[in-house]
Image (cartoon, rainbow, N blue to C red):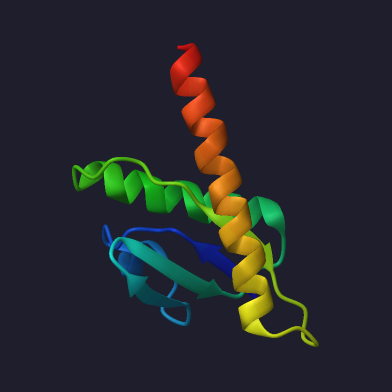
Length: 99
C-alpha cells in the first residue's frame, strides 16, 4: 500500500483505479491510498493527478509519497508522506525564488 498526500480533488478519482481510495483530510488536502508495486509507478500516478488538476484549471500541487509495509500502521505512513510533501513544497518554493 502506498500513500499519496496532498492531492487536490481535481478529478483525482478519475485519475486513479477503481480500487484505490481518495480521502479528503480537510481544506485542499487529500490522501490517496493505492496499491502500487514501485516508486516509478507511483510517480507516474502523481503526474497524472497533477495533469488532471491542470486540465481543471487548478494549480499544480505538492505530493508526498510513502510506502506502507504490512506491519506498519497507515498513520505512520501518512506522517512520512506528510513530511515528504512539505519537503517538496520547500523545494518548489526555493526553485521559484531562483527562477
